[in-house]
Image 1 (spheres, rainbow, N blue to C red):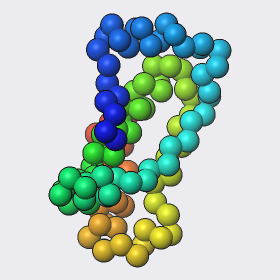
Image 2 (tube, rainbow, N blue to C red; image 1 turned 180 degrees about the vertical axis):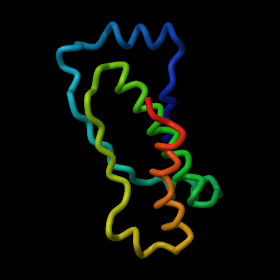
Image 3 (cartoon, rainbow, N blue to C red; image 1 turned 45 degrees about the vertical axis):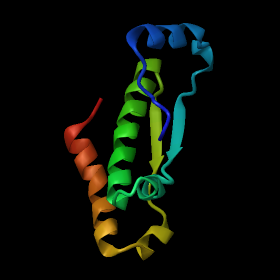
Length: 105
């Protein structure tokens, strides 16, 4: 998450010109991992990391759409996650609802 995913328009165009559009995959899978640790490292609550992770997913979704990616799969919750505090689990369960109610590219 520390890398900046948003480029200026000229940088964006430069990157797109270097891509071989024939090699852009139709399907990309994303595994969400480390958002809570990212937040803790910055002395933030774990949910702040999850929230930031969703912002990153939005940026990736826009970029993938612009590149013609047809399908994105997002793996965001494993059975191990049920062992987290109930407040964190509740927050994680609400993320897809919030995401799709506020953002659909």
